[in-house]
Length: 203
Image 1 (cartoon, rainbow, N blue to C red):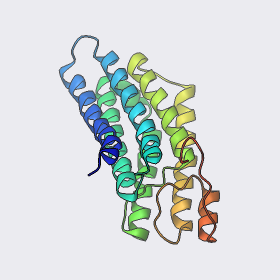
Image 2 (cartoon, rainbow, N blue to C red):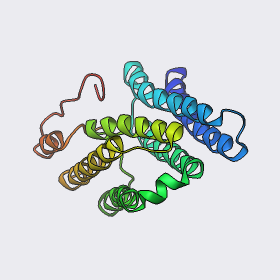
Image 3 (cartoon, rainbow, N blue to C red):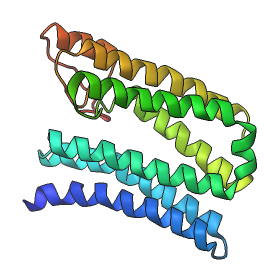
């Protein structure tokens, strides 16, 4: 494995380590552990942003790396959400139904992708990236305050819209493909046209 490939790969795996660290501080609860949680969440978000950017800049962004990135993303956010649930259980109990709906929509994406392509999803759509930023902000707010009102419902409805778009992208594509920015670009791919990537998110 070349050094150029190792750099973004290490960034991806570092996000898994950060997810486990969030679990660890939740279980052992050292002094100021919510602050540690926020720090690890922030570092995880930064690695998520820069691993893809570096991979594209170094010319090593391929299917294997993008699939690994998607899988580690899921692991990281599962660790984060479970840990924050243990830290702030009352909030999750108060919003149980919409949270379960979001989880079900995420599972549906993987089910549809496996049924159609026998592979996990790795579209890395622009909408999903924007949703991740809002989700990050929500998790920080819940960690520090134990509550959220407006931001929670923004995350919920944005999650529903972006999950629906990803499922539509999967259904539109004739063949599995990673890094499909939007449903509009998926329709271009189906017509045999070149996909137009966003410079900052999929460029």
